[in-house]
Image (tube, rainbow, N blue to C red; front, side):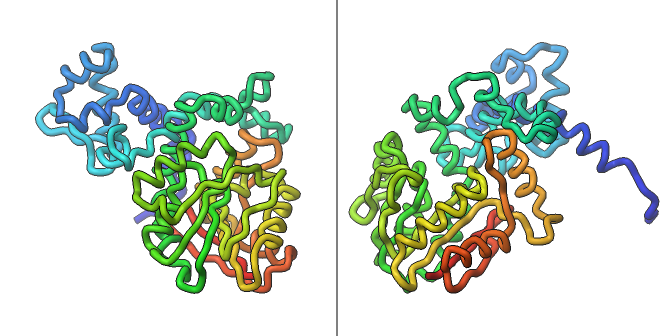
Length: 337
């Protein structure tokens, strides 16, 4: 096997937007949701999705070559992964984040060079439009769909936290920035002795409460309304912040960690989890790209390494810290007071 340099990876990544937009358009047209009903011929899919005869065969076969569809005698079907994760009618659907990528991020990332040179965000706020999340929280239907999509994206990590953290040492917990509440629900389902709360903006309350009731843990979980910068954090044995700290600059990160420390009792714990960058900053490409996404989406946010986070926890007063990989690009950092 030759060790000579080859252009393959350069070309694959450099033109990676070809494959990305092909998948995003398939999600936009709900191709995988249609195929979850039953396999279809290319002609039937062309008519159902409104595809042009010039594009349909190449589009569908590109999805086969990319590993998102299977084809047998010109009949197309989902792969096990796309059937599970990209069928809108399944609770495991994660396409919401891809819908957002298609509608928003795909265009904003076209301004990455400008962001790299100016350090300025490149989303709706750049042109004076209502910031995405402000508009999202003002629309209950859109907010419900978005929070459900976030659940699909983080469900695996939520299960891992519910199973691996030593919950037997504690009685109460609060999920700070709870969104739909999947992390709180999974912790409660796996640990029947615990009671807990989800802390988030008031608009989230009905969405959280419906999800908690759907999972049958409403007797042990409650919603606490508040703003984690403006208000004190609820008191509990364990506080969890999932996909929260990377939205903020260093000052904001330190503020939230300090507020958690003040709220916790002695021997209480703070769990921080998201796409933690490896300490060598050379392996978790998803975490590094997520940090660039924070450049696009926020004024000061960035992702960080486990060592960074443990340092901030130590500075806030936590007596011990540790890091643990969860699943995929996600890891957690734990600080004990």
